[in-house]
Length: 317
Image (cartoon, rainbow, N blue to C red):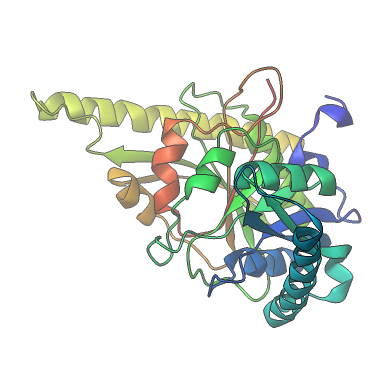
């Protein structure tokens, strides 16, 4: 695979080259999870951070001199607020892009963010948590949900009010979510490359949630147990192959593998031990001829129960 075909995290293995991080920020949001994760990344590796703030502008709005004057004034005010917020989160000036704040207006917030990521040549687009999310859980709002279905850039999602290690990322996790069960997942390679860049351990995960195999009208416990047992056995085999593949590509990595088992997706996630320095990487499914984020049903079910920051890696066809 040539460098041009490598995507996002997999194309940023050289720690001397900064990760280009675009953090989405709303000054009306009392919490700044996206900026906190940007700071967390800056404590782990070299980064260049830009902050983007959006303004929803309906179709047909007039854009005369008064509007342009307002846009300039608002952009300046936002830049001042961004500078203060970045300082509060402890992001050093050396980690900031020369143009560290942009203010954009338009009718589609998802399109504005996608365009801003393309202009910045971002490696990661960090989205804030929905204020409706439970503490330490992820809830994708309408903008995040839209981007999860077509973004060409790795998306970062953060649990609301998450507490992160002051020392940065200490372990990269990868979870299988592709229903095809392909061990050689491109997102696994990306997670391994990212762990190698950071010089931290890699944990490869599969989840075996109990109770999902029961039918609503004819709940046969023996059949359900057999399906759950088969799922777990397939997961263990998948992890064995994954460790071999990753260990061969990155012999320097400390690699572990675990299966999370419990009642439903939450029980499976909560059955594992999580650290403040943990980062999760999830893959997506191919969509069309271009690289896009497109999460499948398993990842959709898993996301709301994650209690650590998640990077959703786009997969090329």
